[in-house]
Length: 214
Length: 214
DNA sequence: GTCATAGGTTAACAGTGTAAACACCCTCCT
DNA sequence: AGGAGGGTGTTTACACTGTTAACCTATGAC
Image 1 (cartoon, rainbow over the protein chains, first blue to last red):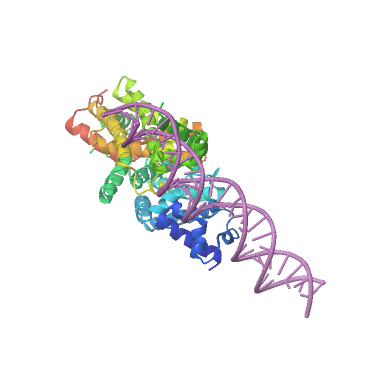
Image 2: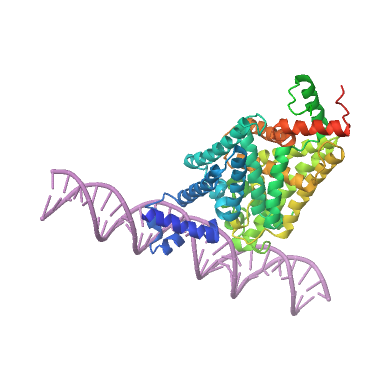
């Protein structure tokens, strides 16, 4: 294990224990029995170090998500992916927060490209889950990437409201809310009246009503 | 204008200019031609000051939202509220970020109650918009509060991914995504096949098909 | 006139990120 | 063998940070 790795591990421990505020170069150094400037041999900046941590957080999330591939069907895999996201957020809330630290928060201009691409990879993963559900006829045909974004946004929105303390509810209640919100997204909110009319019209016109006659 | 207000205004300017990092007690003091400890006559803490700023951010958002009440119909008011949220986030992104600073980020244990209730008020506002749409038959009957949460989460998720730079798209593209996501939430994602069957069955059974015969 | 209070001051403590200059050790090349 | 160079540490220093304690006024009330 290289010194760089040791620094990273130690930084991670400090971060998990005391948040970004508790992660100081000097504290890391002291813990490693070394003086602060030594760290600059391995990292450009404190931000550089933090960015590396963020990268790790993405990796951890990726590991959670990839387990969803064990599902047998596209629907199962999509469901598992949603569960995995929730589990990651609830089991590793500090890591989860790390995913969404804004550059401004770090006094940085932007998140480095190298990290953004990891986010893209996750987006891609979800897009794939969506697309295979569309191909299987489980989801409406649509732009898979946009649908994936909608899903991701809903997940992230819910979780970030929860971990940010904006939802004053207990964890099991929140989990129920999470699932309920997804149920709603899949079912749609719109009142059936007008939708039914459209559907019936469709059925009458195209007469592709496989199950309508029974 | 009291000195407390001057401090607040100055802090706000510094925050908008340079983020939370740029907001230091000494800088605020210097700008006001005063020494740092003087600020502690008006605020307990730096955090106390920041919390006050967060409170202001909630007020600004509230002002955006309340204008949605000028809409003529429940549907219009709901639409305007969604727009208002988006406009707030895009026009005042710094304020927007302020809404969601986590206590950990400030080294604080929790966000003070006094601020949480402002968040509750917004949630209540959205719940009311939802409920009146349900009463008008525009939305499915459901738990209005949960639906409001789903909407809020989707909004927040999308916006926070965008302002966090996770979505590498231009603003107009993002606005289209935002609207598209909502369209999707209202319409539902589920493939129509099975839904259509249910609906048709319903129509046949209950024969409350107002527009089905045409 | 005295006294409390609101609002400021200076000085100090403990901590921060980071840069410059210097020192050591290990490896590789001549 | 000996010197060059790179990797890794050190000390020292600078310019910041939040926050406290002690002290100093001006103002208004009784």
